[in-house]
Length: 123
Ligand SMILES: [Cu+2]
Image 1 (tube, helix red, strand yellow):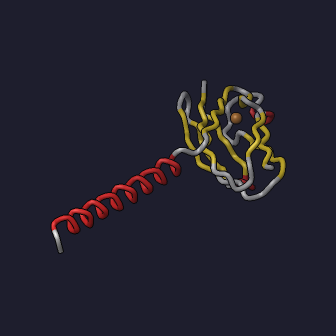
Image 2 (image 1 turned 90 degrees about the vertical axis):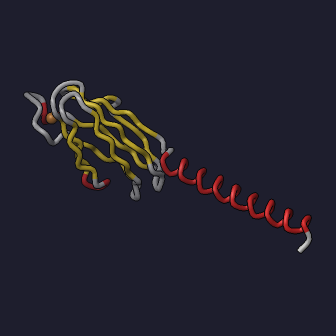
Image 3 (image 1 turned 30 degrees about the horizontal axis):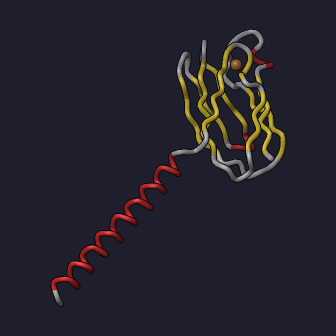
């Protein structure tokens, strides 16, 4: 192989490697870069009290508690989280069923706990 030829081969190999590194790097960023929805729990309501998700689209729910420990339970979306007092719980969800669902607080948080819920619409 001539000097020029081997230089070209080496350059091409380096280019290919850089491109594949770039591509896999981009993929990784996309996987972590899912939309985030912030939800705040505070006696005795969630804020916002309604969110809309797209069927098949992964989102991250970032659940904050502003006071005591709350729950976040929605069987059809397989959500069963605890939000410890004053803390944040993150959960990733990919809804597979369209519909209107009611998420409840399933961790007793006081007198009006039974009315603490929010709506998740999947369309
Ligand atoms: Cu509660």
